[in-house]
Image 1 (cartoon, rainbow, N blue to C red):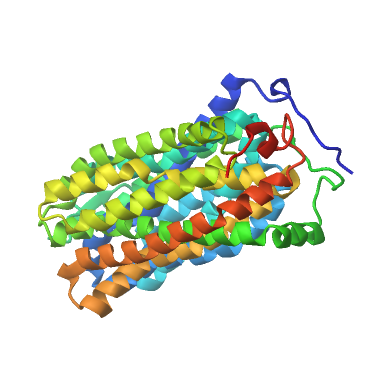
Image 2 (image 1 turned 135 degrees about the vertical axis):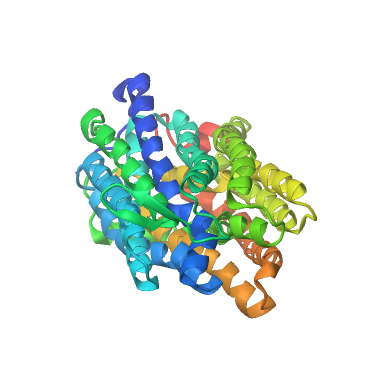
Length: 462
């Protein structure tokens, strides 16, 4: 049986090495997020070439990725609590990169669906392994910042996907107004949008190699009292039952918020192409610069906001950051697609991006804080299952379906984006607000954190 661990900062790897490992993981996550959303930039070209509807593209963008991402995430989370996380994550990075390249080798809805399934299976290793690794690389006070930096990869991924993805689309000629061909080594002439998938997928193998040869598996820490260091299913279910209100509000609240985020991230290129008559490279450059910059600010600031809450007596600071991020994001991204000019639309989305990474970054920090080491992989995977289906899966699909079936006009995409955002974002924010009390109750049961119970350490105020 594991004894309660009261680890000191000296028990963790050196700060320099821990941040190096975080840098490699962020680099991998950057490619993962790029592989996840590049299909949004290529949607106009794919639709022109293959004739897919918005609903079909919503499935390719979201559900094809998310369904199997979530199907595999529970067993992967269970394995992350027992086996070598570094090698699991290395394998996952290689798998999702190869399947992204595979998207450039198929020319049917079924083929693209299958390749996106493979991307989802590979990415299912990412959050369970990383959330567990961060808990063993960084002492508790550093973790909110570490999770913020980790989530910064989504901002880098978004910004650089738009900037370099746009440049790559311009280079290959994958525009929405023509089916361009590109001369790919070993493959000959292929549609330009397929070449983009292949190039990005192959590049994603670089962080897999870095992880394999330069990152070490850290020693596990922070085991709960009177529990084995490898939790049984009975212990897992007991923890989930004991914290069910917290987990339901947390998981589903963030999922509703992320439905809006993944929806507009995937459909923004089509919004600017259809409503504002911008080319994809033109939109990509401007949003990549400003959206990426504000997203990076969001990711970094999220950890500081949580620590500020904690320093002011709010031990539930991670959930409070999720709450305020969800509220700001919902308001901003409901207004943004309705702006009358492309410049104002870009500006509104970029400003709203200040809040974009507060919910996902600090949601992971909140799970980590309330969960002992031997349960972190599987509890994180339950969270990923919910947000995978609800956020990454249903968000792009919902906006595509509303455009086709509610407004019935592809050029009304801005209205469907605003409608889905205000409904789902509001539901998510209300759930998070309702769950604050339950989250504090979950924190009151913590018996493994350095220095004692987090509520007592912070002197929490309701």
